Image (cartoon, rainbow, N blue to C red; front, side, top):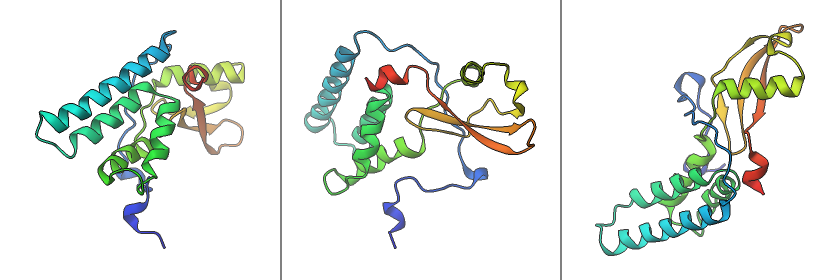
Length: 171
């Protein structure tokens, strides 16, 4: 049996699950490579500053690492999720903070998700679902999940919606 502290993304009862934080959707820049390079330079500067000038706060730098990976999005969130599993290579505080990328990902607005689903289904969402929850139940690096009730079958389902521009963020 695995130790509970090693579980990277524990299941949380619905009543205790925090709401998914929502951020607006923005098209990735054509200068993405430069942006990612600058993010890593900023991260390296932050690390050096924390070692040399600041009193080393053991929680500040790991939090900054997670935030940088979140800002870069897509592939970098996936990389952070994998790095969180490498407790044999990285310090425990960094692994704990990066594990939040697995269980507390950022979502996108419900109206954007609704539009993507309507485009994929080829018609208004009301044609397929009696009920549709605009607020996502969960979010991950490349998508989020919405609850919906199928119109004809009267069954609740989970609808996974891929984040806009995911192909560009993984390319």
